[in-house]
Image (spheres, rainbow, N blue to C red):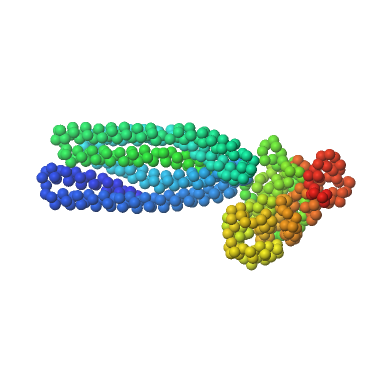
Length: 565
């Protein structure tokens, strides 16, 4: 880049010297041959200079995309390492804008601004040096005008950066809103909320416009640049006329001074054209730095290994809240032996899913201790913890990828024979045989083309393919038809063999295979370690709760039609 830039600048500075020679030789009555050679040399240098400019732009694009693609990868890796509280506070659209939008602006900055501004800075210095060489008075006057112009533009740039930061944030807010609404299009239309969404859309655009208007200085810069050009040309013509009148320079030198002065407008023009990108780049760099400075609230463990096989589990006086002054779990204390299955019951919002999230360290508790296999979970590495603890929910996340990648989470170390064996165990062989390309069949976005039961069974297949010691099933079969649910139940029975299990449910009947029952009520431990409640033991606190009106409403909300429970 440096070699190309310096060579290009040198050729730009050389061509005016050839023109001066041409003019002075012609006026002096020189022969035609030298003039022809000078013209051919001028054309050749111009062509070479254009070729060098193209090559420099090609290299700069490679440099820009190499650097910014690495930056994108670093940002994605950093965001994936942040805790769930951070992700809950930011929309997917905002992430897209900050990771791709901001970095794309930096790519333009590296590929265009560096080439134009760096080369023109060298050109500026070269022109001023040659003007001093011709006459110190010319050099001094043009230098004063050029420095004044640059200082004015730099001052405007510094004042504009905060406005561009605000503009980039408004852009992130807008795309975050847009992503949310597009994802919920079906619900929005079904519930007649289109007018509300369009009003929000209009208000966001309306609030964005004044921010962009303040950030944009293009009109003001255009006026300043035109003024600078006029002053520069006036200085060149006035000094050239004066020096020629006292016989200090030739006509060719007058043209040289005018040409070099006019050539100075190129750096200024490039600054005018690129200043807006520079302001955006400054804002993007600041936003990227802010994102990198966000540290995950969950620190990785020191790497204490977890035992192989089924894991024991213990909660000791655990309390947790998502936000301050709103405790979700209160002083929970219970334990589960390896290979046992714990059924967790409770109303919606009682803390059942929160309990599972704590075991995966998606969030960290504020008080107490959780141990797996007699190892405090904060001491185990996050990687090993999430390899030994798996969770299946009613909301299955499928990727726009092959069946193989969806089942293995892109782990190519799992052989196809093992995948096919698990599919056979889960009675998914008929479904597999219907796939046009077997494991290489591409699944559509969000598992398009799959039934809810098939998607749920694929989620179970993922767990079977992992070497888990603890399996958490969070309402994994609550939305399925009875036939598919029976298939899922058989899969669960196989899945829990040789593993510790936690089954989170609303209905008592779902917990038929549980060895122990735990009841949560508003984050408090209401009952634990008693299957007697399923048998209707009157000594159970839960059984007594059923005798109250609140308890009757609770159990009625858990029961299936027909009074099975």
